Length: 278
Image 1 (cartoon, rainbow, N blue to C red):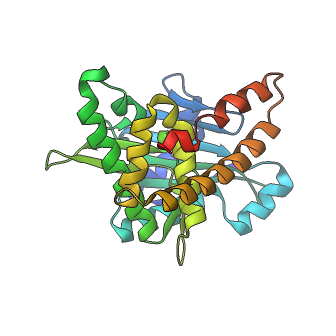
Image 2 (image 1 turned 45 degrees about the vertical axis):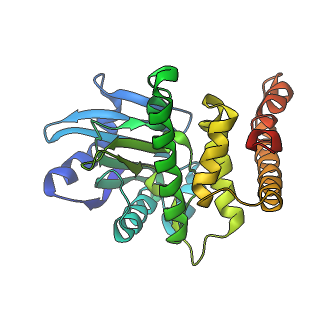
């Protein structure tokens, strides 16, 4: 198996991408996410500290199809280009590579600049306890407006959740929102209401569990640009409930644990008309 470098911002990053598998296997690697398919975290290199994401592309036959359809590494290159062209913040893509075996893509490697002074969404939203309520409102409003701006620009994320948003202080005293899941960014002719609500539902399923109902309601209003009329609010919440119900069925259908039904019941309470003040 060999690494094929698809993109490198500079020669030193080409060398890093060529041995990305060694970096993630190193004892000094600092993992942030570890699943059956994905390993992501920080690695130290001669060129500095970087963020490395390693994603398995599946079985050998699927790897052949992936090579032609586009691996995670190739999609990350496109996603970074889309966000850059539209003026959105994201970690700087330093390199991307594919590990191939007999022509099939087995693993994708994505190397980005480490956002050393940025924090994931929930770390800032939850910081400070009750005394920081006003600051949390400002942060969530900034996130809502930036997600709305993303959609208005014709850009959609397949996996917009709170761990894929990072925040850092802006020069004007505000907050800069970074979209970090580059490979799931897509350009659309138009991002319709269903896709917009799907992104909002996914955010609610992740960050919503940390926030009170009134805060979640304000997040929706901030995204919409103001409080809609009662009838419009009911329609939007109804569509969101239907989308959430389908998402929960797919999610829990894949679970094998015996408490899946109980988890589904708990999750279904996170987004309801009552949750949005109706």
